[in-house]
Image (cartoon, rainbow, N blue to C red; front, side, top):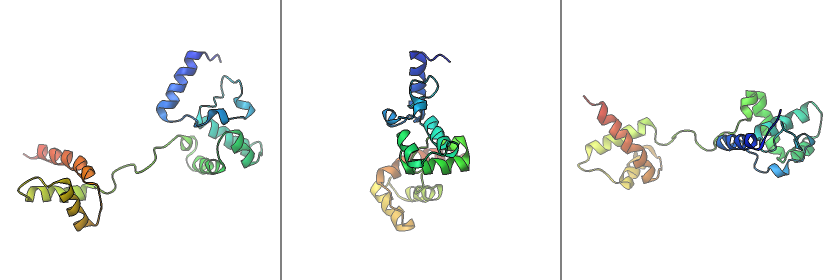
Length: 161
């Protein structure tokens, strides 16, 4: 399989777009990844898979394999557990942090919207944060509240007959 500079550049762009690039490709010293058109030291999913295969099939030590693939032992164990649980998709990168708003739920937004409707003027973000803290014991930044609440209010306005 021929791999020219354009193909390598496109592949690199695709890996970067998916967040699947190895953070330290220069640290990959495994012989598979030297001068190969197929094995790419920038492809983190491929690196993790070959690392797992190397331990499982070839019987190599985890410490040596992790070092040869430019990763740490903890990364090996996390990758192994995800691969065992989810298969190859488990090796794909994931975004870190909360996946959805967990403080400003529909219930809390509805309560804040009710507070806005009951007041004579639009409360400030700090006032809304105080209401949220008082009623639900939830601390949220005033700007976060306004960023979620204003679209919520507009959406509810549109649904009125």
